[in-house]
Image 1 (cartoon, rainbow, N blue to C red):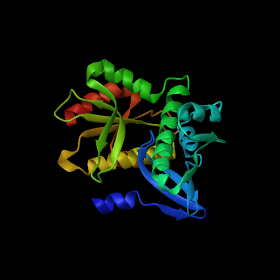
Image 2: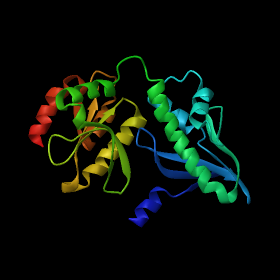
Image 3: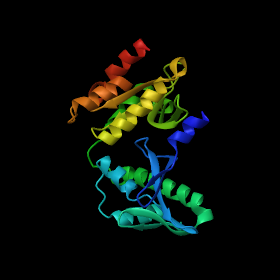
Image 4: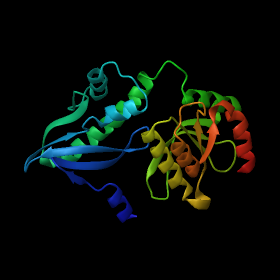
Length: 242
C-alpha cells in the first residue's frame, strides 16, 4: 500500500521546477497537481492555470477569471493573476503549507465555478437528481458521496442512493469531454476491483449529446451506462439485476 501511494503521489521534475501531485481532488476526480519553483531558500507554489483548465473542460464560461479566483482565495495569503493561483514567495520550510493551500484553492475554485457559472440549461446532473429524488425520496439520495477504490485512492461520486439494498448505489454523471470521461472511468474501474466488497455503481449520461465512440466504449468498460432520458426505467432494470 505504501508503494502504491508513493508512486501515485511522487513529485516529478520538469524543465523549471517540480510537479507535485496531491490527494486533493477536482470535481472530475482528477488529482490536483501543483508546480513548485525556487532556489535553495525560497520557493513559489502555483497551479499554473490548472483550475481554469479544469473548469473550462466542464464547459463552464467564466466571465472574469481573476475575479473568480480572487473570490475563492479571499482571506488567504494566496494570489490570483492571469488565471493562475500562486502562493507568493515562501521560505523553503513552508513549502508543504503552500502546496496544501494552493491545491485546496484550485479544487475549491472549480467546484465554485461549476456552481456559480453553470449554464442556464438543465444539466445532466440536475435531470438525474430530479429523477432520483422522485424515485427514492430526498432522504435516501445523498450528493457527493466519497468511496475508496482497490488502490486505496478516494473518489467523489455525484450521488449515493441508500434505500435499495445492503450496499449504497453510487452514481456519477458524465459529459462528453475527454478529461471528465477518463476521470470517471478510472474511478469506477478502481471501485469495481474491490470485488465482493464493491458498492453498486453506474454512470448516467445524456445519450443525445455528441459522444465519441471511444469514450462510450471506455465508459461501458468501467460501469453500466444509464441514459438520463430513461433513468427511472433503467434504474428499475438495474435493481432487478443487482
